[in-house]
Amino acid sequence: MVVPNDLYKYMTLDTAKIVLESGRLRWQSPCQFNDLSEMQRMPRLEPEYNEAWLIYARTLVDLIYNKNVIDFTVYSPWTQKILLQILQLNISNYSEEDALKNIEKKIPACESEVGDRLRKIIESKNDGTLRCFCLSEDENNATMWAHYGDVNKGCMFGFGHLEEKGTQFLAAEKVSYTADPPVVGSALDILLYGPSAALNKRTRLAIFCNKEINWAYEKEWRVMINRSAPNQEKFSDLLFYPEELTSVTFGLKVQDKDREEMLKLIAKTYPHCGVFEIKLNNGTFTRISLNG
Image 1 (cartoon, rainbow, N blue to C red):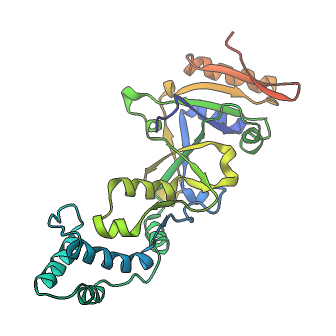
Image 2 (image 1 turned 90 degrees about the vertical axis):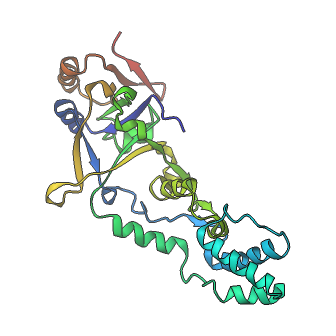
């Protein structure tokens, strides 16, 4: 998925001043998020392992006894071993039914669902080094102004990615919003062919970039990195290139003196930056350029 040219961060006025003065952005640990279900909704498989293992045994026996499969290279290493065992049973004149009974004994059923196992893995790796920066693709969202822009007294910064410098925002990934945790694949396919790169990516996105549907108004994109921090801090303040800041938009209720103070900071360090303000026209929030 192509990352938008500009992504937006709504923030309070005090935070906006700190960002302009320091040239740094605060990347948070997911444990700091206001959505307490973050990284708790694990993706699903259909069928799950508990259902798939019996289907798996029947499928393998069918491949040898009825489909005469002789090329095993497309299958996972563990599947190749079982197919060789079934082939030997067939050569030894075992019936298809007896071969199935023999193989079922050698394929252990899973005792837990994939979601439970994934949650334990994520919890074990969530050691405080994970950092996330969240942005929105919406350049003027009234709800975002209310929730994150200090009830329209804050600012919204636009950030663009610099391909020639390989900046972090190039790696931004779009958050999906679903009523239920997403299905990322089939346990039967994993048993047959092994985990694929595509499945691994779908699983990662389902854990880190999927939220309940009531958050869909955020139209969020996020970038995640690993970064250790001193004193067990749950955040990192990381420098960004001045050129990455493409616009600053003042909320509807920003005072004139604060606007003038920030305009001086912008002119000094970010002269290329577009400057906008929000106006209320007939009940509609309008984003208007101040650059002339």
